[in-house]
Image (cartoon, rainbow, N blue to C red; front, side):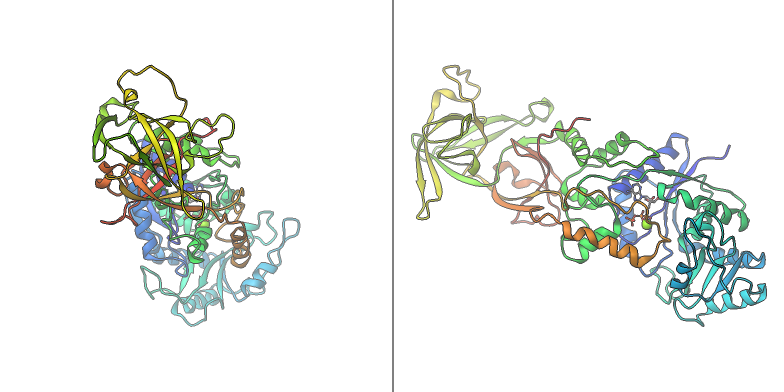
Length: 542
Ligand code: ATP
Ligand code: MG
C-alpha cells in the first residue's frame, strides 16, 4: 500500500472561506489518520485572476487553523512538464490546435441530448499541430486566437469529454512565472497532472466535479503519468445567510460593501478570525458537519454554537455598557470608591477574581430602563428596584430629561444592606443589571453584526472553472441586490477599568451581551474596539 498523500489546492484568486476550512480539515485530518502527508498546493494556472497577496493570506489562514503542510507546491512549477505532456498528446493524435473562438466552441459543444459538432481543425496533422502549438508558446498569436484541445469524442454523453480545451493563450504577467509563458493550461487538464506529479493518492474535490472524473482519468492515462491519483468527491459546505464563494466575496470587497476580506461580517477565515472565532471552534464545527455525498445547507447557528462552547470556560466574564445611560446614587457618599470582588468566570474558578469599583455615578444600559414598563418588565422603571450585578439593589426615584425630552440621567437610591455576597435575604428583586462605574470606566467601541445577505444559500454549487465566465459573472452579481442594510451597528460605551490592558484578539463574555473580541485592526493606543463574536443564546441545539 502506498502512503496516503492528500493536498489542499486553492487557486490564489481570493481569501479562503469557511467552506475551504471544511476541505482543509478533511484533507489534513484524513492524511493524519493514516499517517500520511498533505501538501498545500497553489493552483495558479490563471494569471488574470491571481495575486501574490492571496498566496500569502492563504498560507496564513491554513497555519492559523492549526495545520502544517508537508510540501508547499505551485502548479506553475510544473508548466514545463505540462507542456511536454501536451506535446505527447499531440504526437499520439490526441490533441489539436483549434482556431474556433470561445463562443464557437461553446456553440458546437452540443447539449445533454444532442451530440457536439466536430471542429473543422480537428484533423490537422501531428506536424501541423506541433508547429502551431510551438508558435502559440512563442507568443505569435493574440490572446484567445487559438487553443489546444483534446481529441476525444464530440458525441460523448459526458460533455466534459467533447474535445475539452487544454491550453489557452493569455498575454498576462503571472505572479510567479512573470512573462515566461503566454499559454496557460486549463484547470481540468492541469489538476490531474499536478496530483500525479506530487504523488497524491486521494484527490478530494467537491461534488460538482464528479462529471469531470472521466476526463481526470483520461489525462493521467493518456499523458502516461507514472503514478495514478484518484479523485473522490464530497458535498461542498453551504450555509444559511451567506454566499460561499471567493468570487462573490471579492465582489463585496470591490464594491466597498465591506471593509476588506477580513471584515468581521465575512465568513472568510480571516473575517472569522478578526471577529473573534478560534481555530478550535472552526475545526470542531468542520468535524461535526461531517463529510457527505449529498447537497445540504448548514444552519449558520451551528457555527456559532461551536464558538460559544469553546469560549464558555476560557473567556473572562466582565461587564460592558454598550449604550450608556447615567445613573446617580443620591444617598451614596460623595467621592467614595468601593472595590467589590467579582469572579472572572462563574463556571471556571481557575480564572480567579478581580476588583471592580463602585461609586455614586454609574452607567447602565439605556434599554434597561423604560418609563412605561410593559407587563413582566423586571428592569428599571420609576419606583422599581433592581440588583446591580456584584453590587447593591438600587431603586429608581427620578428621571432627568434634556430639552428634547430624551432621558439623560436617572436618580436612584441604593440599600447598603443588600451588598452582593453579604447574605442579605430581606427581599427579592427579579431584575439583575450590568453596569460600569463612571469615574474609572474605560471608553470602548462595540461592533454588532448581522448577516450580510438575506436567507439565500449559495446557488453556484454547479459552476466549475471550465464554465463560461460571463454567465458565471452575471449570476454572481445577483446577490448584491439582497444585502442587509443593518449588517453592522456601532456603539460607543464603556467597559470595566481592568480592560484598559486588553490586547487584540483578547476575548470576553460581557454579561448579558455575549462574547466579544478585541479588533486587531481598529484598536490603537487611544481606541478600544470590540467585535461581537456571538450573542449568548441561540435556539439552536446540536
Ligand atoms: P470559489 O468558487 O469560492 O472561488 P473554489 O471552489 O473555486 O471556490 P478553490 O480555490 O478552487 O476554490 O478551492 C480549493 C479547494 O477548496 C477545492 O478542493 C474545493 O473543492 C474546496 N472548496 C471550495 N469551496 C468549498 C466549500 N464551500 N465546501 C467545501 N470545500 C470547498
Ligand atoms: Mg473555483
